[in-house]
Amino acid sequence: MRIAIISDVHANLEAFKSVLTDIETVGVDKIFCLGDTIGYGPNPEASVTLLRDRAIPSVIGNHEKAVLDFRFLRGFNPVARESLQKTIKMLSEDTLRFLGGLDTSIVAHDCRFVHGFPLDSPMTYLFQVSEAKLRRTFVKMPERCCFVGHTHLLECVEWNGDIAVTSEMTRRTYRLNPDRAYIINVGSVGQPRDGDNNAKYSIFDTDENSLEVRFVPYDIAAVAEKIIARGLPKSHALRLW
Image (tube, rainbow, N blue to C red; front, side):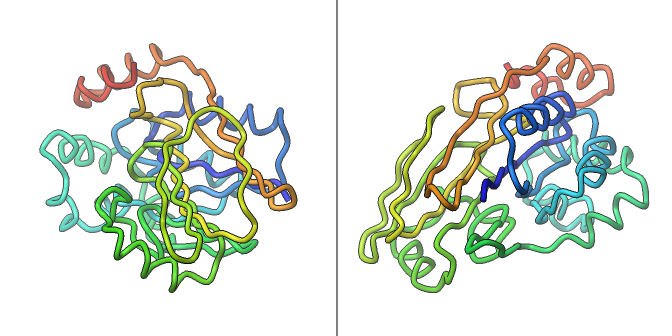
């Protein structure tokens, strides 16, 4: 089975559409989303609508948590908080109800899908976790692979039953060891932060035990112009480049 994993669309409709077109070109059996479909970008309502229209299962991200419960806004920096406060006004009641029904994790095909960190945290960043906590998590986690987002960075943590080894990933196909467990950060569709401005997503082939990291170009200028035109923080437009 070929599974596409997308994360952190962040209301970037152009990037989202380009990734879905790429997915259709290469062919997969299933798509999963790791949350943060909204926030930062200019098209939150349309991005969630596209997610729903394509029937893509998704977990909840920290940005969804923030528009559903204002107490979570305190955890964001002032610029991100401003963006989210404006994002809330762009979302319909139907979309808010949909976001409120998202779970913190999905388990399927011996894989776990979560926004931040397993087993089901939408808030914890992978870089925040100590080696001791990594070890405890791998011991507790029944699935062989967990896919996460949240940091917008491509990264792989490999567990051999004793030691967890972390490494960066880039555009290529990786062979996974069937006797080892993994936490894999698939990067961001809508707002990469790894020095390359292409949209990122991954394809996990359960038969081949392989992970393909794909980079997809999109119309960045169009998105940046819309961010500014809609009164969202200019910094969120500039960092797309």
